[in-house]
Image (cartoon, rainbow, N blue to C red; front, top):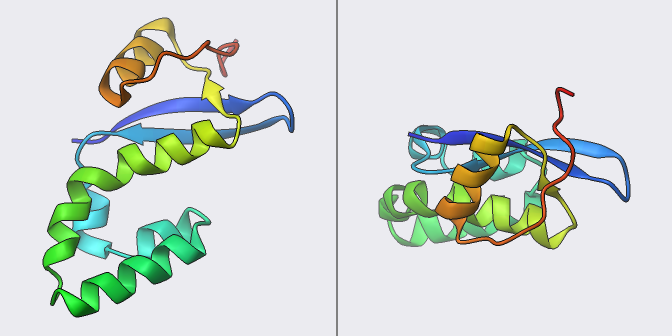
Length: 106
């Protein structure tokens, strides 16, 4: 089951949800998930891969997509900004050793 962690980019002041774990949303909606999250080129790539693999890739990407999405947020400058427990769980699940931001709800 996917777990949510709030992430904040202090440079631009935006807060987004990062995810880690299995994505039921991706399993059922496939390439539309990246499109809805604003990753249009990733969604197009996943659509092409899904067509060529007759949808089998959708099952595989369900295990990978949340981690990849959150890693792309980190590359864009986002940092964990949730509770210390959620930050630690996300960092461990993602294999990340990052400084955390200020909690989003503080």
